[in-house]
Image (cartoon, rainbow, N blue to C red; front, top):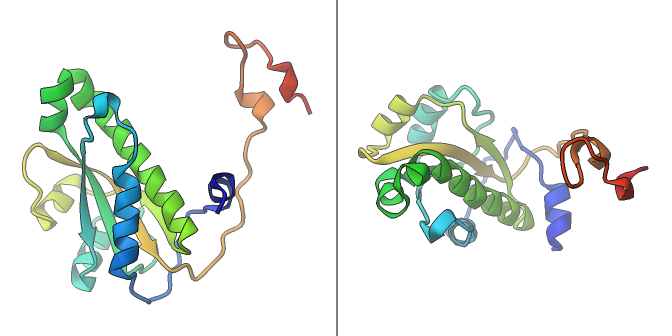
Length: 180
């Protein structure tokens, strides 16, 4: 699959089939995430794969943005201690979420290419998630990726035209090649 096809075709899926996701596919998603770029090559990410139905239900209850009943979720956490040791407070406080988001984007595109649907959730109770998943100090939950076989095909959302969001050599200067 062409990368641009994946970028334009991927959607946030909120309705899933009950079919379990094969472990080989899960490994492919994690491998895609692992190869994401990171500031200073810190690779601050830690992945917690959640496939136990009872645990998924508990996670869902403390995550208002978690829709559907997908058979899998992957919690992407940041290792703040590793980030601090390598990159200081800037890496710990700001870069880790950016790095984790790049890992998630790789995972989303890989999932789409593999016929899986995903939805990224940030609205969850951090203390509750940390307790449910026994996450130690220094490891912070960042993003929850819901994964499963889609039971819907969401329509593409409207996107702003490039001419409204791109500037050339400074803000407010039109990039004339983008005129429609």
